[in-house]
Image (cartoon, rainbow, N blue to C red; front, side):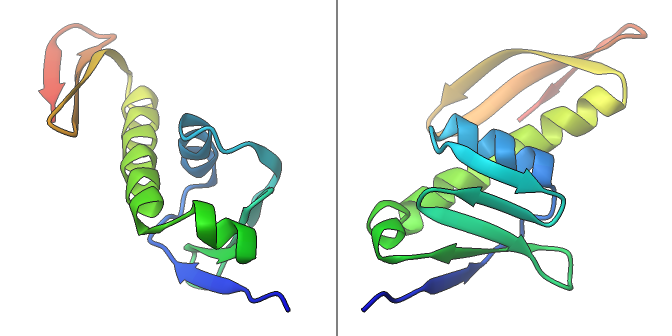
Length: 116
């Protein structure tokens, strides 16, 4: 008998979610404004605007709390990069030190800013 597990997230941006899943080598089968489906996990937007993950038996073996931590890290990275891009910044020199992602953001209008 199959059992489904749901996990509430703080993820609200579908584009950043799809990018984060790609960074974790999780192939997205379909994506609409309110749902993202992969072979082992699916995400559905709830009334409060955040996505809830649903896992079947196979998904629970692959998508552990450690995987969700990595997903949240990648989601935050992609969300920030997308927002900086919308504000006119170009992101470069992505590095990881001690599990942290840092990068430099250069304004297309001139100047440089470093974010960690």
